[in-house]
Length: 87
Image 1 (cartoon, rainbow, N blue to C red):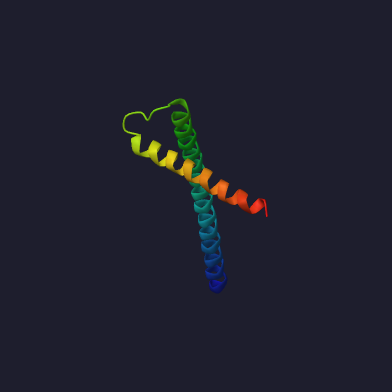
Image 2 (image 1 turned 90 degrees about the vertical axis):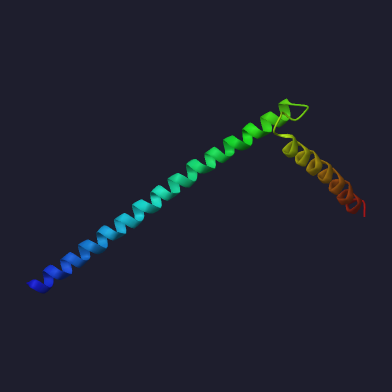
């Protein structure tokens, strides 16, 4: 019977480890989900600050300038792209 007890112990250990791995994965996914929610709120906040201010608030000048530069570049690229639509 001793061999069967050892097999049973090993099976229990494997089962316990599998449950532990599954629980850790579940918790890591929950953490990633909450982090993504925070990132979405940061993005929404940033968009609101940007859209609600015609001038950059103190401390946000570089970010505002970068956004305006990117918006200008997007417009330039769209104009360039529209040339291909006429062909």
